[in-house]
Amino acid sequence: MDRPYRAVRTVARFWIWFFFRSIEVRRADRVPRSGPVLLAINHPNNLIDSLLVGAVLDRKVHFLATSALFRNPVLARFLAAMGVIPVYRRQEDPRQMARNTEAFEACFRALDAGGLIAIYPEGTTHAEPRVQRIKTGAARIALEAEARRDGRLGLTLLPVGLNFDARKSLRTRILVSFGEPIAVTPYLAGYREDPFKAVDALTTLIQYGMEAQVIHVERLDLTALIREIEALYRDDLTRELREERGLGAAQVDPFRLSRAIALAVHFFAEREPARVEALARRVETYRALLATYRVRDAAVRHRATQPPRRRITLTTGAVIGAPLFLYGALVNALPYYLPRWLARRLAHKEADYATVRLLASIVAFPLFWAAEIWIAQRLAGPMIAVAFALSLPVAGLVAYRYLGGLARLREGIRFGVLALRHRQAAAQLVDERRAILKDLEAAKTAYLSATRGSSW
Figure 1 (cartoon, rainbow, N blue to C red):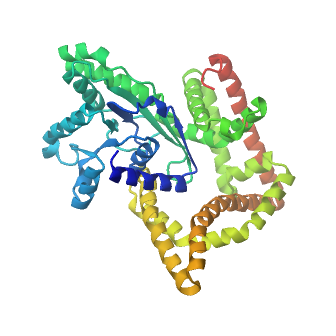
Figure 2 (cartoon, rainbow, N blue to C red):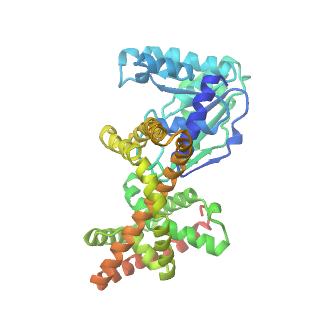
Figure 3 (cartoon, helix red, strand yellow):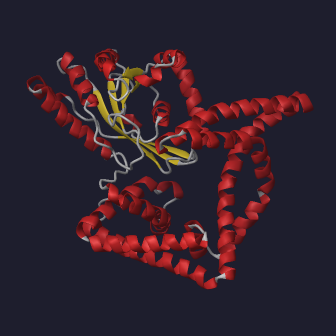
């Protein structure tokens, strides 16, 4: 790994650690430490996807990226130094499609040299909770690279899944999952006889491999309901698993629960559509009540599940932590809110929002911190400036997490006011939520019985 790439990866790792709540990496050991590797990755979150994959691997990754990024000469030089290979897409400039021969040759050279290439076979980033039908590029590269070496290249082809708990939020949980290696050599004989048929067969296998690593929603008409059930029910499932099995918080896999919810909804949609329709109507009614009384589900859930003593403890903690929050918010307010403002105005797609915000934050925080440190040095001297500089990232993280707790506290107070002024309405919300959970518990029991708990 060359020094420029190592330096960029170090910077990327810091900012990923700073901004994201947690990043779980599964089976990264499936990526060999040397030798040719081809990663086929889903593409939910634009540039963040490449930063994540590059940050979690200890090898240099040659990403395939749209040639549109190379139009700026300065950026083109930087991307070339990072080993990025330009790909020419028809929708950008049909006249340049012939140049994809150069892209394939660059891939073959990198693989022949024992390099690692990453490709996004979906072709573009998107906001759908599924792997879109992938293109044939990954299969074509894998088969041609092995065919040129008569099957002796030793290529490792791996599907990779990127899962974001909340796509637009930076303080979210992320899962980077490396799937089982896909054998390429069994397709070589067919590739020599009928390249199109062999490429199509391997592409289908790559598709299945990628889908197995993500929370894949097969039917898009069920997307909204799956997201609603996940928002309403996943925390309750987590609590049940912890209580029933004696698990710690880190031992419960939220992404596995999300996948199980999606599978269960598809299961009942095929076998008991009336149950799914009734549940959807009940959830819609509950959401309408929340909108009518201007409260959020989290406040109703906390009122229904947390004892008064726990709510008093949280309120006390919020009061005690207020001074540190105010300090952190004061010194980090502008670099926090400016990237959000820019992302809302510049991101034209949901999949672009987090990337715009992250890039703007990477620029904004150092600039504002440098300016604040300079002011501190001018006003109070170098020692105070050093102490102030050390406090900035810590205070920023504390303030960000406190801000989330403050929002929950505010919602709790709003629901408390509703309970005092309109007791019947508050009781209706709690009862409606409990009724939905009762239906979901019954569905869970039926699903586990029918599938013998295979996906739980």
